[in-house]
Length: 79
Ligand SMILES: [Zn+2]
Image 1: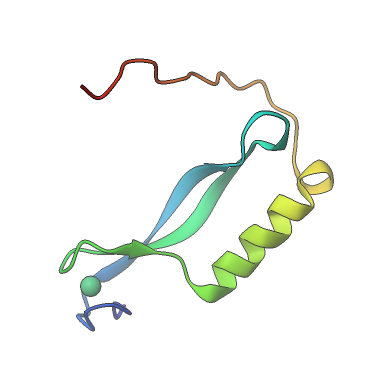
Image 2: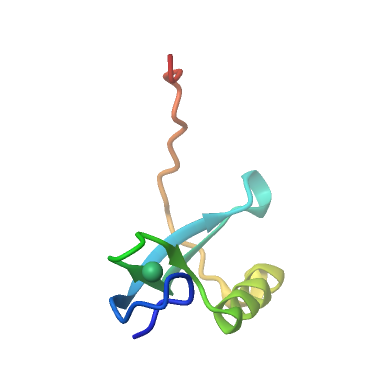
């Protein structure tokens, strides 16, 4: 498919998992269709996907399934 950033036809759709929020508002969303371009190395989601993510985040209590997840904090400083 065509990349929205550089126009090359090297973009592919991949499913990714991302977490949003933190603590009590943390929600992990699986299978997010994300566009990856091997030409410009840009990765982005479409406007439709962004809208759906907003909907999921607002309705996380009803659309989400409670799962046991291990959440680790990255403690080591970058220096
Ligand atoms: Zn591109």
